[in-house]
Image 1 (cartoon, rainbow, N blue to C red):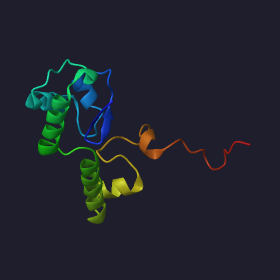
Image 2: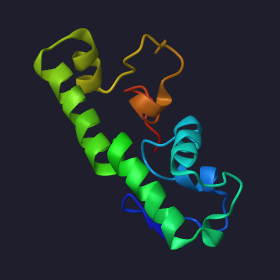
Image 3: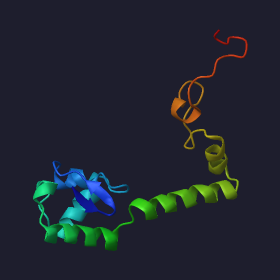
Image 4: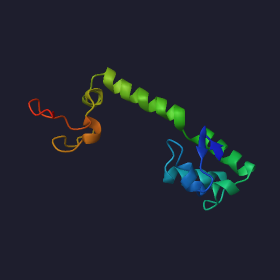
Length: 123
């Protein structure tokens, strides 16, 4: 497996799909990276030469914020929202959807598993 941006990229995938395994790189960004590095997009990761891998690493380092740096930035942005006590920060703090989604029926990912009614506990 090739190691790019501190992440193992699967060998059996094409270059564009393999790059999407890196946090912060989607398909559009992967296409830009491959274009800037002058690498064939349909080539498998296992068949990339060391020179091509080095060019990909260099392009990512210079032009994009990925993995640890990006995770830190996202966490700091959420912390800032919580600290200034805005509506979005409050929603993050109490674990509810932030972007206006309904919560009466959906939002199970945010709210967690359903809670039984107080008197209806299973025995």
